[in-house]
Length: 180
Image 1 (tube, helix red, strand yellow):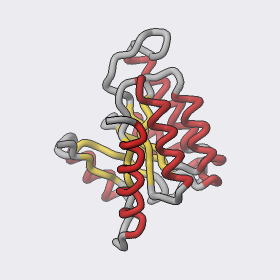
Image 2: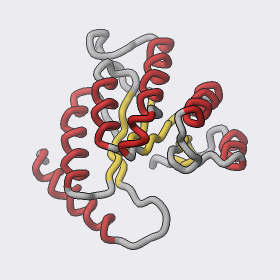
Image 3: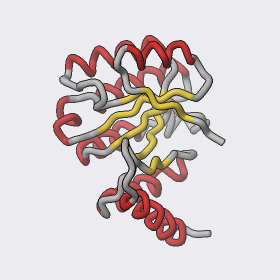
């Protein structure tokens, strides 16, 4: 309907999640749509976080602006879910070649796994099925003092289940994502 209506509704939902006593991580994950919604979504995230609501945000590696966004969110100690992105952007605002997007994903993941991000209380979530990227991230996490359970890998339910089980058996936190 409009931004204010949406913000009021999401605040009500986020406060209900905050007040609900359950075991485990309880977080409202804000997904990310095309680039037209990025700034509004980040502002909504920050508003919810400032109200002490358990909120996380998705950032897309294909967008050129994402480095600035990840730096700011890591400094806040935010829970950030990094994905490559499924939308097509203009070359002025987005990386369009797969190798550019992959390289930016790795750069952003390194920022999320920095010592500064860890000390700020950030909680990185890596949405990827790429075994090489996951191995590199886990090694970087160890090198920067991230303990198992302080970050996670998120994968689609039913995609690469053997890898999911292997990671979990090795002590990696794995979240299964089931869009519907």
